[in-house]
Each structure stands twice: as structure tokens, then as C-alpha cells.
Length: 558
Image (cartoon, rainbow, N blue to C red; front, side, top):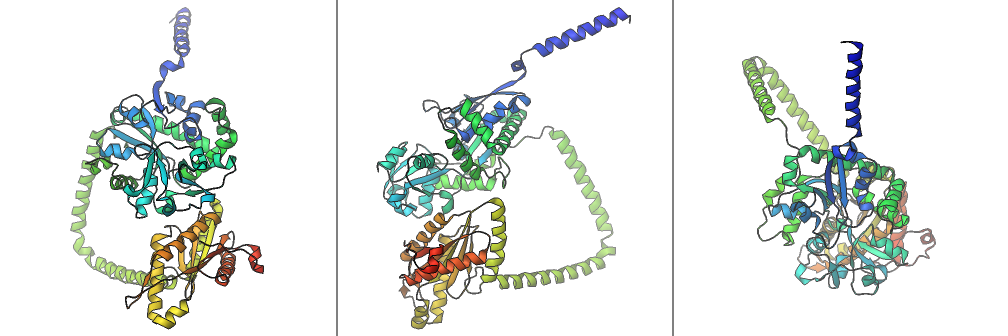
């Protein structure tokens, strides 16, 4: 090739590269749409950031974000009708799946729903029992399912509630048109605070109701036909969420400038901090979903009568999106080869079985002895940590488990509170009905506390004769006070059935304290508050503060 020919060839190559690089970038990107479930706010921060920081573009995607409009179809309907490629939905996607609709869940951002019953503090409504006979606004369809499940868990029939299907506002609550507001803990409480109103939150999670929220969904056909696109969109979106949660102030400013100019920075920061608690990025992988938890959510919808006449529960096995295996032929070859290798190894093992039988018997004998020793040690450990009468933790276990949880709570910056309980006039029960009756009372009170009050991650222990302690994790002193009121209410509604089948009323006195760095000090403070409750008539609780040491605190009664 001559020098002139080489120059011409290089010129042609250069021209082709110029033409390729001069093509508009949009021509190379796959266009997608995402239907949001509400108006622009921090609730969708990860998707904004993935777009603003170019994470979608890096994945070869051009994404259009569609804010919710009341006149448009719901997010799920938008996906089912092919009006959007992806959408943000509630856990109600499980209902559509049980109705055999072709929708799949790609990821779940919030591990707990932000939905709460919001009440004014001045009205004193702190539990489902307080509002069960009051006007309650609910959203159409399944949007209020978590809040209604709370009542079912507490033994109420939904037909007996005064439900109003409307989108109630803050003014309806302030003016007394409704007793409680169907609210987001990241939104309406901020509005009340700004208006100077104190409020209470009735959280479904405190009653064993824990739904996913802000679930990323897509059409099943789209997922099967374009698995690589679904995977790219999911990963780019989660990358956006990682960035948003790690750079909250920057993210809030981006949302304020480009998406939600009518919201204040203070409101957006409030929303960001509360939603981060529900996303739990430090404890759970972003977008994580559990199939068993989805089935529990589906059962709740069925029991509420929201899943239709003939829900197909088996469809829940197909709800979570699974990336398909690209080459099944390679998989089959791998399985066949593996089975062949297993067969060869089995023949060899059988050939040498006789020669190794004596050794196996000796190993089996020693293994059996070791298991017996481990079982005995475990039983001794359990006996050392368990109260033999009530079968809950004893005082030693309370401090061992409590100190470990307290250290973790300090690292995670979680509040902890302590409730110390004492059975009023317990000596009179023993003197009047006998010690066997006293033991029965202790066991029944323990069952009431464990089954009706205590959350799974709290610690309940018997620390003395008729004294109990509850260490409550991720709980401030105000929430602990609500729990104490619920305990008093439960005890007033339950009678203790003695061995002779007679029934007696039993009351409790309680002391509450914050738990900071020292569990022993918190227990001492709670004991001081408990003493004050005893001094002031029993059947009540006190919250510790320094004034109690001088006995000048006012009683806190249920």
C-alpha cells in the first residue's frame, strides 16, 4: 500500500468515526417511562438522582418520569395497559397477581409502610380502640389496607367501623370532621408541626402489621421479553437511591430546584429523614423482597376481603421478578455432568464402605456423645437465663441481652426505653388464695404482656418476685408511655382465672425511663418512678425525671 493510499484509508476511517460520534445521543438510548404513585417529592428521590446524575444514560436508557395525576390510571393500571414500562405501586400489587394479572414486582424500596393513623394529641386518641367508633377516612381501593388490618388484628370487624371513602385533609382533622387522618408519617405530621399542633401516631408496625411500600413493578411480558432492560433499569435506580440517601442535602436541593419548587427545603429534609428510617439502608439491602413476607401480606388482603371472590394464592409464587437463565442447554449439560460425577463417587463410596465401617461407627458414637453434651450445655444455659415459672428471660438474661442490644442501638442511633412493672397487692393474692394462685396470676400476666403488648424485638423479663421489665428498642419515652397506657387498658379488660375457676382483677404499677448508656442506671430510674406510682394510688405509671428523687413529680395515669 502506497503512502497516498494509507492517507486515504485513514481519512475514510476518521470520517466514519466523526459521523458516528456526531449522531445524537438519544438515538443510542432505549426510551422507558416510569409512572410515579404520587406528586413529586423526596419519596422518589432515587429515580430523580438516577436521571440527573446520568445513571440511566450510563446504562443505555432514557427514562421519562410521570408524576401521579388523579385523572390518569393508577400506577398498576398504567403498567397493565402498557401506558408505562415501569411504575411505583403499593403492596396491593399482590392482589392483582392473585387475580392472575400479568404484573411482577422488581424491588421494594421501603421495608415498612409510611402509612399511619394521625390524631390530635388534645383528643387523647392513642390506640385503635380509641378511634374504632369514630369517623375514619380511607382511600379508595386497597390504599388503606395496612391501616384497616390494624383493626382486624385488634379484634374489630371492619363492618362495624365508621369508614369514610374520601381523601381527607389536615383541616378536616383540625376542624374535628374526622377523628384520625389516613396519613404518611413523612408528610402530614410536618404540616401539623408547622401549624403548632401536637399529634399522636398510631403505627401499624406496632400492632404486627408490616407491609412493603413503593414497590417497583413492570408488566410480566415486558420482563420476559427484555430481562436485560429490566435489570439495567433496576440497578441504575438503586444506584440513584444509594446516592440520594448518602447525599441527602444535595438531593433535597435538586428536588427543590427541578421537581418540587412548591415544597420547602425544611419539608423535604423532614420527609427524607423519616423515609430513610423506613428504607433502612444500613440494615437491609436496597430493594430487598422476601417471598414469605409477600405471602403474609397477601393473606392479610384475603382476610380483609380485598382480594376478590376467588383469589389464586398460588400466583404469589410468580409475583417476584426472577432474571431468566439465558442458556438452558448449558444448564442441562451441567446438571447431567454433575449427576454422572455423583454416580461415580457413589460407586466408589460403596466400594470402600466395608473397609471404613468401623471408623464410621466410632465417629457416630463420638458424634452422639458430643450432641448429648451440647444438648445438656444448651439446657443448662437456657435454665440459667430463663425464669422457670413464666418461661421468659430472668434478671441475668435481661442484663446480658439488654446490654448487647443497647450497644447495637447506640451504634444505630436508636432510642430505647424501659418499663418496670409491679403487680399491685400481690401479697394479698398469695395470702388470700394461696401461692399456687399467685403463680397462676404471674403466668397469665406474662401471657398478656407477651402476646398483646410486646413486639418481637423487645425484651420482656421477670426480674423479681412480682416485678417485670420491658426493654423497648427503637422506642422513645413518649411511645413507651403509649405502651404503658395500653398495658393498663389491657389489664383492666382481662381477669385472672385462678385454679378454683374464680376470677379476680389485677392492676399494675409502672415506672418508665429512657435508656442511654447504662441499663442498670435506667432500671434504677424506672424503679424510682415505679415507687412514686405505688405512693400515688397504684394502677398508674410514672415517667422518671430528676424531680422524682425529691418526690415532686405529677402522676401519669392511663
